[in-house]
Length: 392
Image (cartoon, rainbow, N blue to C red):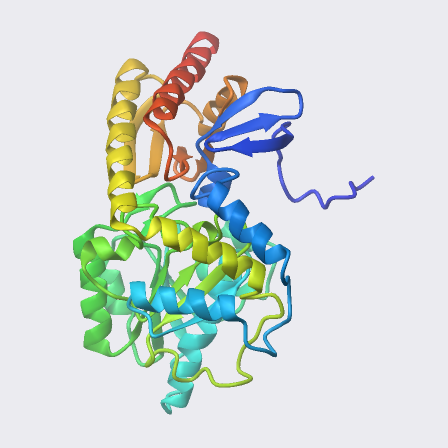
């Protein structure tokens, strides 16, 4: 008999009832150190007082009106994002998947309005993840994402990761855009080198095509810059955002230049909930905190502490862990043991990590994780590794 909740998730046998900072409390009273942050969502940890205040204040005033009307909180958040980034305009969504949908539509509409409706192809890369909608799975193209869901949305060209010759050969008269994650998340925490991101920007400029960045997982302070592409000193034409921008409240956005968004006029896209007063009130509080230079400097400092500690962990358990990679507080531990075994051993030792491709576990803690919690995380990960060593 099918469960009342559609069984599309392989869930851990854990039921959390409360969160506080970097800690989650199980219904049975156990206390877990959370290095997953809801898959990079709880950027300020659990139950951050500023976010609670923003949400409850707004909840006591107004929840929803729809985008038929002006929404002051949405305008404030859009203005903040425009001031802080390359963007001239912002559309608010509820998720990264919805942001992908609009990014694809925006790029194709751009070329249609330019008189080149044949330019519909978007180049994407092996190992990518852009959500689970029809456009998102077609963009990723992997069998894991697409099997059984055909016919797939056409117009995507999938290339190997880091193959410059294939990229140059793929651009033709049908190319609309290149879409890429500056740091692959689901793909196993694979950062794109700064010089490669600069090269992509130059290539797009050379051919007059759009550059779409998917910063759903790596954005909003996760790498120590407000957005990951800033490390390379480049700017995209369109950027997908979600996860951390809501700090735990469902919120996403598409940021774009005036040129890239020029085809999106009244009636070309919409959302009933996107940019609602609740989400945008929380989003403003998140940005007001994370966008401060001192906060971002602290992210980089904490990241250095965590990474150095992880190198020590690898040295202590060379049969379990192989290497650490990533940027800022978006780190991956490449495992020698099966990564799912490491995740499960972590559960047994009350520390939460997130599996990814390439036998990697993701460490995506709250951006304000304390040094004490980092030390405790290493202690618990070491205990998990010892458990694996004893059973292998």
